[in-house]
Length: 67
Image: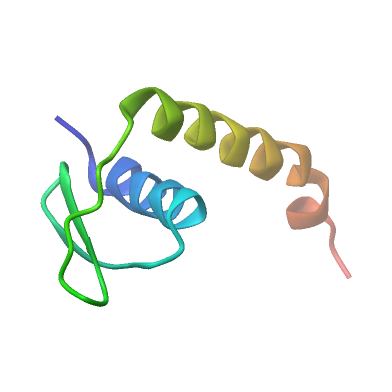
């Protein structure tokens, strides 16, 4: 089961991999603008989530800076 934060990250990862996705139904299904089902590759999604998390972590200093 995914938490709300992980679902958001999962959807973001899916959109990075499949830019044509416009609709999600739960955690496993996605469709493009024409209503076609997008086949999701879990290993590809997991790798993209890790990449996005690493990118986010690498920019922590920017979020911590005070002006």
